[in-house]
Length: 90
Image (tube, rainbow, N blue to C red; front, side):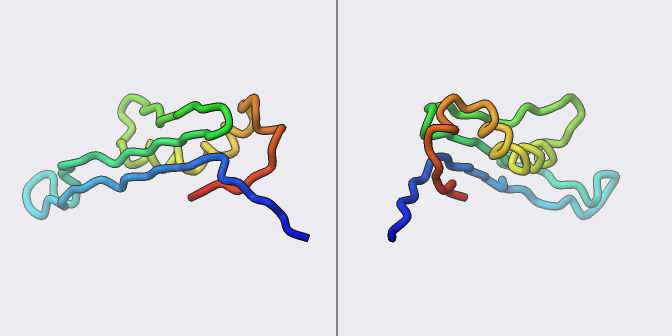
């Protein structure tokens, strides 16, 4: 018996590009030339979601929080999620 699987959602994560500041008052911080970002696309209901960045929250932390919760959060509210069982691309 063959089980048919379909990709029903995709999570895109761009880790960004930056360099660590080595000297001065900001030593140890990252100077970003391209900020980290993330996007989730549901192929069932055709929605795309991006992280909501809270005031004073670093963008990398917002992307990590988004990636950790989007799959289960969206599956709970997706109108098409209960119609199909499928694999999700990482």
